[in-house]
Amino acid sequence: MSEPLTDDEFYAATSIEVGSKRGEVLRLREVAVPQLHSVAHAWQIIYVSSDSYGELIPASGIVIVPDTVTDAGAGPILGYCPVFRGLGGRCAPSQLLADGAEPEADYLAIALDRGWTVAVADGRGLGITGLGPHTFLAGRCAGQTILDLTHTTRGLPDLNRSAPIALWGYADGGRNALWAAEIQHEYAPELELRGVAAGAVVADPGELVAEIDDGPCAGLGLAGLVGLARAYAHLPMLHILTTEGHLAAANIENLDAARILARYRQPLGRWCERTDPWMDPMWRYVLARERCAQQPLHVPVHLYHGTQDTLIPVESARRLISDYRGFGVDLNWREYPVDHLQAAIDGAGEAIARLASNLQHTPSRPTRSTPPTTTPPDS
Image (cartoon, rainbow, N blue to C red; front, side, top):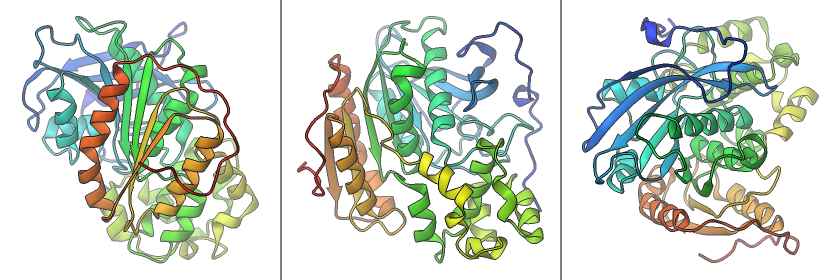
């Protein structure tokens, strides 16, 4: 059985009027966020964003303003990119925060305690009813929704319209934060982005899906296939599915992450006409476009990872470091001798500290450095 979609009219799909612009507010309402304290305001927002091909779409998110400074909303803005929540159902971060069930609330609290306004985008296809499935693993889609939400946030009443911005995320959220930073200079140049922190980044989805295909997280492979097929809807992405695979793909569209992992434990080849579907030419093309480090970042970056991470191997992050170094990116790197979940906890303090330092300085544009090496830089 699929998870029921929300019947909340606030999240009903809405049309975009001619003349609308990215970042424009379509609907706004104030909500309580039971897990967070010292909050002046929290708004669920439906706003205008765009898909990978420039078409305007409605997107949802939440903006939380602290009361820990004299003038609430006067500080910087943190665009927070959450880990994968699912492809559908009531699992969007803006909904979970209002329900008091957001698993990353403690990280948001750290930023609020510093006096930062926090903006959390649900991502394309998640939250708003009938526009799914969520485009899981589609980096540009995710990056655009968080950039547009931060633009929206700067225009809300009593907020700092020239506020500097930082981005932070872990796992798929870290990947989305990096994608947002990579496209920011051409997609949203009006934003004053000053720094990015990203942990356990899924740098190469094609590499990762092969790694997890035989383990307890195999269901993420099918979720990624469905999410990317939605993002690249102009391509025949689902041609590799069997008849049973099409049924599975239709069902998984409305499931949160926990149900996906519980119900779809089989290798991805179980649903496809070949055992290694990621090697199909069409999928190789798409997955190559989804690698991080497609272009340089123009702000400082802090990356961190657990050396005992069995979900997202640290070697992929080390290669990512080399790629960014080749672009001349101002990059800091930290390894923790722990697993995937513990690295998120252990790395949070330094991530916030690095961003706080970044927010104090306007970054200069980097210049290309010498070719990357295979050895990650020291911390």
